Amino acid sequence: MTETESPTAKPQSLDEVLVAMDVVDTLRHRDQIFLKQIDHEGREEDLVARLKEIYTAQGMDVPEETIRDGVRAMADKRFTHEPAKKGFLRRLAIIYITRARWWKPAAAASAAVLALGGAYQFGVAMPKAAAERALVRDLTETIPANLAEARDAAMAVAETDTGRNRALALYQQGMAALEAEDRAAGEAAVDALTGLRHEISAQYQVRVVNDPDDFTGIYREHDDLPGRQNYYLIVEAVSPTGDILEVTVRDEETNAEVRVKRWGQRVSRTVFEGVAADKQDDMIIQDAIIGTKQPGAFEPAYSVSTPGGAITEW
Image 1 (spheres, rainbow, N blue to C red):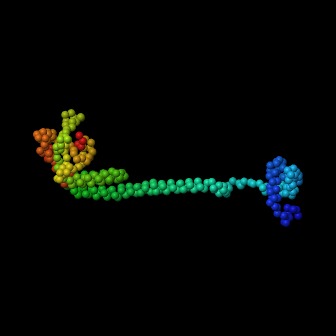
Image 2 (cartoon, rainbow, N blue to C red):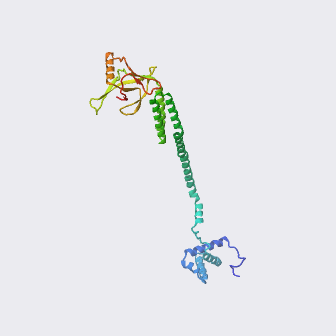
Image 3 (cartoon, rainbow, N blue to C red):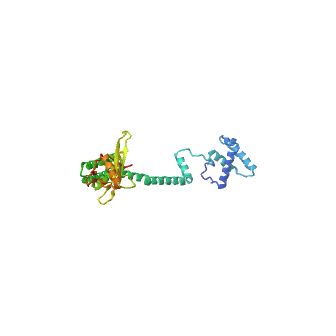
């Protein structure tokens, strides 16, 4: 039985292993011919002899068997590291080995992503969803109910078809706005119906203003109708308690409805000149009341000739 086959071979000491490793290192860094010689039978003895000479020249007494073991270790690649083949397991191993470099930045990045996601969810997504639900509720439930209530309240106090028709028109405008998903216009229609109810319920007299700091009356000339003039008396609405009320007036020049305390009521030229003469007499207008608004009426009833129409700026 050969030495390598002996089951009772003596284990190598640490010093012997280190020397064997040195032999391998010497073979690796010396002439490449040494490495090639390992692959040819019968050359091992020559290689051992040459290595023995190298160590003797360096003043080292290395046993021949240790040198021989190093040569065999080189041949068997016992002290040679071969990189693992590329693959999934190798990538996992690299990730695990380098975890000290990447886990803290990765954890911080994950935390930042979670924080941003939470901020977006609670700061943007949830408020947006709540606002959308509120919009749907307003368009389909709240504002339609308010419109119907305001319409019914206005029609309940209206005693003329003009007032009732006006209430229906405002209600329809509001519903059309809701169909177009215009919440602001729908709410404005509710406010307009509420204002209409107050005005229909109101009672006041239309009085010509007799104020030294303001006009009593004015007239407009038409650019497209030379010589044609419209005459207006500046008036205000006075409650039974003497308060000046704010009323809604449609401006015939702009066709806009405006809330005002004073407006220019269009009258005939005869009425206009009569009031002017009355004021010139003693600077006091004796017949200043030209109309009365009763509760339930849509507009005042005038005691003077009024072709209709009004202005809100002069």
